[in-house]
Image (cartoon, rainbow, N blue to C red; front, side, top):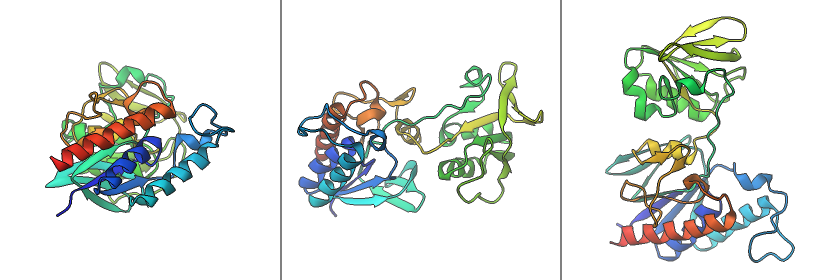
Length: 285
């Protein structure tokens, strides 16, 4: 059976990787969610090959077409998890994708809420990964901050461990179906509090919610969020990689903004190329 690679992200890093893996005869699937930094770039004038510049959305769309033209498959979906079951399993809102190798090229998107005392309890009750830390809160009351598909996934992961799971939307309405067994609180959050560890959430209306753990799942999962779920080393919001774009997990690579450093297209394309080469070498032995 032929080997395959799943690339999470359809920006410059992911497309650059796909151009190499697909042309090497490897079954290549790109999962992109349509949300990317380039959509905010009205005109890009510092990238090679465009004498009059190019808009970010145009560059993004052109890249996806280029990948398709060399044989890569492109699917639109939102990735919420990464695990290993004989092969790597990429969990998304519309299904699961299995791969012999995975390249994380999602960019960086961790959103920190503007909540009083928030930083004080990071690592002391506040977590960014339900798969990583859920077991430590078994039998306790926990909450997930978020309102979309990613938040629902994290809440579902916590449900078997926790005594109760509450979805905190901070004033928004849930934008995805809420799984059975999960409570919902849409009140605006003012602060979190406790002594040495997190003990409660304080809402703007003066009410409180006693919890032992708060899991942050705002927006969509960034590269570091995904990497953590399979045990890859991260550094803050960045995925840790070596000079070949390899993580500490054999077969898992990362490229582009999610690895930190200079956030420039030229760098992401270079890293995408390196990750593609590394995935080819890994898959072909």
